[in-house]
Image (tube, rainbow, N blue to C red; front, side, top):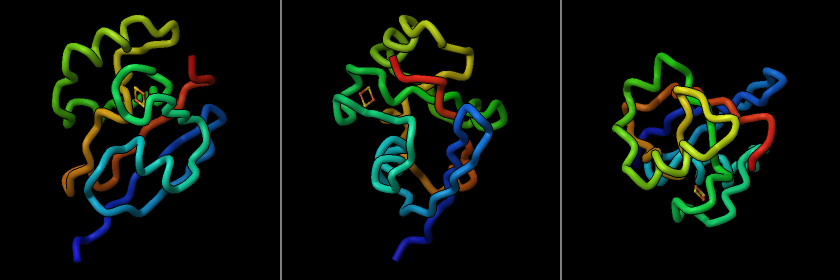
Length: 109
Ligand code: FES
């Protein structure tokens, strides 16, 4: 059995929801499986809808692998993108991400 890791989702009002998940799949899947609000994930993880947009806390942002060009392009077109924006379906959960904190945007475009 793999040790679970904790991922914290912060909503725009600052309310935090920490979930314990197996370190596999993606941040988006962790949100959907745990009924975390603010992540729609319309395309189911296909990197085509951008409704799984999150702001990664700065101390974690640098720890993530670089986004691939498709993700970067989608994020570029988001009106509310910030330097720490990522698509949560493209962030693979690994043991090293235990404690990762992300914030959901005011609304998904
Ligand atoms: S779920 Fe559609 S881009 Fe992430």
